[in-house]
Length: 271
Image (cartoon, rainbow, N blue to C red):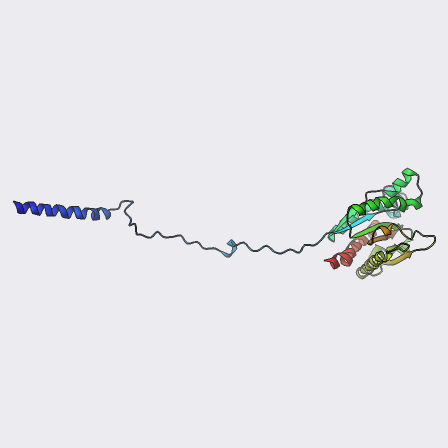
């Protein structure tokens, strides 16, 4: 009897000892071994995932050109005739002052920032009953104010020459151009700087289209202005932009060359 009880007790102990092992082998969700290593995801970084360094851009300072028109109603006969039907060399509406948009367009194409003196000198002369020869005197305080308020790398006073087509027109490679002439007053201290600018631009113009610049006319002495308000700036030019017989197309071609010459003579040398 005692032997049977002992045998039963021994069987019971074996069952109790084996039960956890048997349960562990059953497919329950939480029966993974705690020591099992969890597989880590692998990430592959393509070269494009790494941001490329930003390119280093050269900072180019803006080149500002201020333009004014002391004789603002100077006109071109072919352009006035096309607009009004009359051949006139002075007109209140169709004149050199009204060409600002065209001039700005070609300057901007050459990375030049254009500015204009917003002052119609000839209209002011007519309103005040002043004389034609007083134009520079009337324009002077307005120009001086612009120069005091901002810095400009170049100042140009545009005029239209009274010379005939033979003098002011150039044919080059089957195209015609309005010639350019420079006027430099020499009756003030420091005119050499303005003369130097005129020479540099004249040479650059002729290197692009030979003969498009008629050169520099230096004015001084009795009977001439000799200043032309150029004493207000060491980098001021007076340009005779074509003559009375030049067409709109000829002036546009010349303005394209002038803008390129300004860039080559002054902007690129600074950079």
